[in-house]
Image (tube, rainbow, N blue to C red; front, side, top):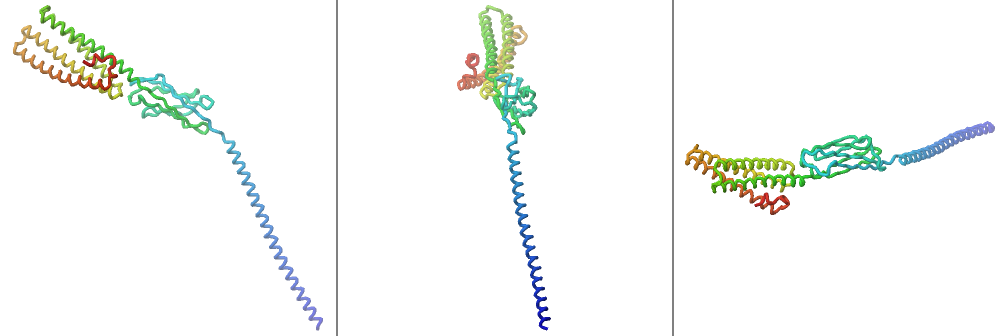
Length: 328
């Protein structure tokens, strides 16, 4: 009996030890697995960091290898230093690199006034614009050229002043007008001489009439030339004072022309009276009317000459060298 009980106890103990061994083995296996997994994760992290470092090194190498952009230089040249309205100006723009070599096949934009022109550089790195000046507002202003650049070249910009030739043209035209005025004044002196000779009865009325009519006609022709020159000059002007002076001078010339025409009419009416073709009453009536017109023109002329003199006193350079033809 005891032996049987002892056997049962031994059997039961054996089963317990067996169960403990199994549980212990399972726990050990789990711990080993977890430890193995942790080691693998650490290795993966190390590998990822290594790969990242390699990528960063490669990126840095690529950045270092990226080509450096070259500097560029734009320049503008004009075929004439000064210009006026209706002039044709040749504008040449040149693009070069930092080694002073021309850069071809690049877009260059050129701004003149409010207009922008775009052209491609040739093998010499140049573009050429043949620009006709149709607006005075571009004179005395900068021409601007721009290059935007690309992956190889840095952008650049250049400016060039388009100078106005107004002062030269103005002085030249004013001398031309002065020449016409000088001839008109000489013709007026010739008319006075003929009238004096007629008063002294050294010549006949018909002779005096022909000479005076011829002189007046010539004077009117020179006045027309002077007025045309003034109109032509005005188109080129941008300076306010010059424009004011030319307008005053033009009005003066037109008023003198009107006076001349009225004088010519007086001589024609006198010729009709002398030839007996109109009565004394008609002659006197017409003469009175013409004299009134001349008087009104003389008053207008005085006002214009007063304004011209005041402008001259403020800005004497307006008629420097030809003062005597414009100022009494």
